[in-house]
Length: 521
Image (cartoon, rainbow, N blue to C red; front, side, top):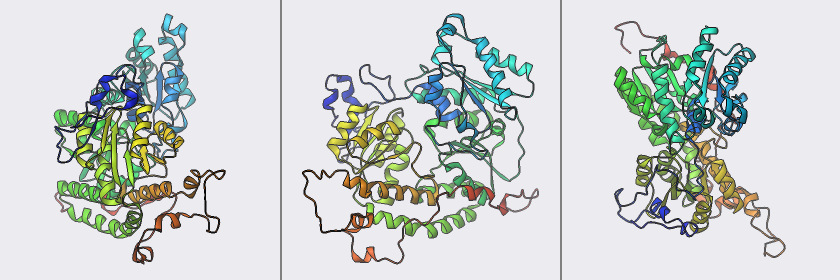
């Protein structure tokens, strides 16, 4: 296993074992960097904190909740709107954010009165919202404010409201992943089991680890409903507070993002005996296998196969159109969490791109193991890279595109490397059959943007042709293709609409009626 030492980090020898190059024939015992450790002082990590992991990733996608942070306003502002976790209640949780805005005087004299006042004001300002989550920050944790006591006082004075307290200050773990764990366990300890849900189907699941980025949850929900499966709750994208209190009545926990939400699945199995089944909504093959597994569990495989056949016939010719034009393109897969391994082999097998680097800022060893196992030999695997290491990697590897978050993505643009937002997407959703084609389309548009290519031309000194037409996407992408591919009558570009989600909300689902006791499914 050749460890990779970045030139910019030679002064920090501890970073040596945090990057490796996957060599020929190496297994995971030979090509695994150190991961999920405390950030090394001096490296200027781009990680988020445990509070961010609890509020921004897990908590805030709940749609019918006042999400209030007990701390400085900057904590709340930094975790507001940078992910597009839309909802079907007019995006309340995206449009509004709440904070107690603690100041220095509150650090000295305490801020419990401020918290109570803010909570009551928030409920009065939004009288239709009766649920609240309070997130602890470093500031309120360090001075010892008793948030649980204040929440109990408010619920006693306002009997129609319910409040969840998440004690996950920023220093509660090495990264935001520590906050994932804390809010998972806090939710099942405080809220699961105190509401009895209405069961309307013979097949009932919790959809766990799904945050409805640009409608991902609603796409997957459509497949489940077409199979006659009731989604009791989604943890937490487009999820309802009270529905999530009834998670204990599901027949199966369907887990998408294991890094953020396996904790609550494991606890539901221990406490209520609900089995866990891991799935993957990205990529035709992975999604098809996932639907088959769920169908097999409930004995409705025929319904799953009908969906797979219909969706594949509709969208596969469009995916293949992009694959022909993306073959061999070099990708740095730097998404942060579970997409590291959800995407690694799927984009290679189904879109033809080569993954030349993978990284994670907050993932555990298991994430890196799965990611490295699924990418090609020679790939550079990095744990918790900083901005300078990312720049050096791009200058060395010369990728055609990177998939990452907004901060490293904007850095990449400065050196003329196009990026797609792996966290909030560019033009999602990316889950589902149609979503995977949308992802391929966005990759194509980024790599073959004429403006991007022109941006590298300095007309004051570079030579350029004056007798050719403007460089269109088609001219750039089709230059090396065979005539058979260029003139194919079966392959085609994406034909879906700008909004692929809203139409799903009005769809009719004939299987969703509960069968009489003893009747065949």
